Image 1 (cartoon, rainbow, N blue to C red):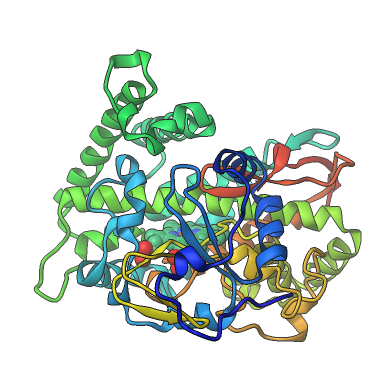
Image 2 (cartoon, rainbow, N blue to C red):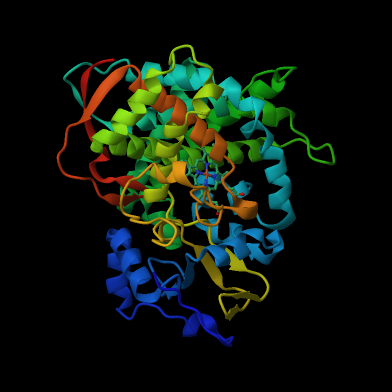
Amino acid sequence: MTTTTSSSTIQNPIKSLPGPHESIWYQTIWGVTKPVSYFNTMQKRYGDIFVTPQFAGLPPQVIISNPQAIQQIFTADASMFQSGLGNQMIQPIVGDLSLLLMDGDRHLQKRKLLMPPFHGERMKAYGTTIREITREATEKLTVGEKFIARPLMQEISLNVILRTIFGLKKGKRYQQIEHALIGMLDMFDNPVNASFLFFKPLQKNLGFLTPWGRFIQKRELLDKLLYQEISERRAQKEHTGEDILSLLLSARDENGEGMTDEELRDELMTMLFAGHETTANALTWALYWIHYLPEVKEKLLQELSSIDAENIDAMEIMGLPYLNAVCSETLRIYPIAFFTLVRILQAPMELMGYEFSPGTPLAPCIYLTHHNSDIYPEPKKFKPERFLERKFSPYEYLPFGGGSRRCLGSAFAIFEMKLALVTILSKYSLKLAQKQPVKAVRRGIVFTPSGGVCLTVDSYQ
Ligand code: HEM
């Protein structure tokens, strides 16, 4: 792979950087409809730093897939960048007080408050629930029946969030919130409906006739339910639950201040937004690769045959080497997020010989870094063994981004992926019910296998 660097620093590098020459319309259509082909082509032409033009409603961005440059970005002081500013588009969903929209000290303080529930011992408590939800969701599968993996994985990931993050108990409120959330999330399946996120002028409430009007109604209903839940939980004297909302209700910052109802609502929506589709698609991809490549399935089942899947401790599952390699390779070959959050420079920065000025949007590209053939020989091939043979640095392997914006739910997502896969594969023998290899297509913020992956239940294990 080529590396494009300049020996001398340039005054306005974003203009001087190499970048595509096709018309903006052509590139927008190409980039939106076939992002994998677009970015592969750009990397072949320009190497590991290039600039995209104003594109799909976004300003020009510097696309970076060079590990040294990514290291510089991830290890720079957090005050060098703003990312919240670049996420304003999702404000209607996550609200003004979301971590995703914050920058600077507020962002760092909020991360400190939100981080503890996602780590260490806490995770163990979620293991039983994840396995239970996976069993419940897959109970309906019968031998000989075809099913599409993605909606089933979405059901699992949504229920995991409702029970472990929102801390909801099965019952009327649970059903109402689940229903309201699905109603709102479904709107974003259709790019026409979702267009109001990209084009502010479409955010006019003309009632149920317009997508924005429908969205507002759905959001109001959901908010009402969420605030009811928060207020009831606050009224309980002790927040003893293991769920994340309970932990956040008792969290205090260094001034002893707790979170307001509005902050709690916005962070619940943030975790739902960031954690639902991402994990569901990671699971869908994993099921695809395991069943597309018989040797991968065989090796994995061999490893699983050595454990008692029903009774094994969740933490032991985390240590299974081949399962770990399969999950890692799944997130390498088609990382669910193509890019990290954009980093808008706040001070001059030199990267790869270019001097970038404040205001420049830097976009570390996870997909292109994961397809660098110097780091990953035969990058288009699914080979879990590469993760058994060597360790990759956090600047070479970055499915969860890095630095001060690294994914807050990374450990949780991996935990859920492994537990759900083991629960499914130790109960059912599945096979692919489609001959054609799937393609990676864009679905909202994530990259997903086209068609959602059709599988059949072959037999019970
Ligand atoms: C396979 C599943 C997931 C993938 C691939 C993924 C990927 C990412 C990526 C690439 C980022 C941006 C990091 C950066 O810019 O450096 C991110 C941020 C974030 N993720 Fe995840 N994520 C996943 C699951 C989750 C889950 C389950 C949660 C929570 C329940 C979550 C919560 C967040 C939050 C809150 C942020 C924003 C962090 C900040 O702005 O400081 N993610 N994620």
